[in-house]
Picture 1 (cartoon, one colour):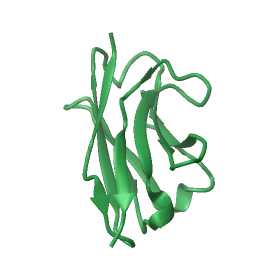
Picture 2 (picture 1 turned 45 degrees about the horizontal axis):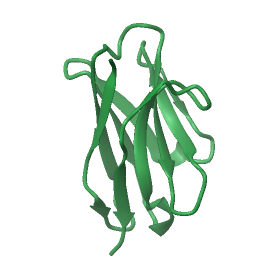
Picture 3 (picture 1 turned 180 degrees about the vertical axis):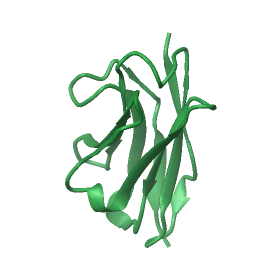
Length: 118
């Protein structure tokens, strides 16, 4: 059973960089032809795919967030990370990590609330 768990600060100030880590257990992020995604859901809005890193380490980003988003991984810890720069109040959301791509997630973390506030 694959499990994902998000971790990181729950409060970020405007203009700062949001950094979250997803720790994966029950399966390696380097095998299996899988994609490992970051998604978010702002209050009252739909779920938004932010980007992904695949089993080879190649990255893919949503065009609307590409200029502010960076996804990387630490294979020794079986983790992948999200960095979102220059955050604004509109980046307040529940952030999730998941295995798969939009409409095809098979495992997802429980999510972590991130609030952008001064």
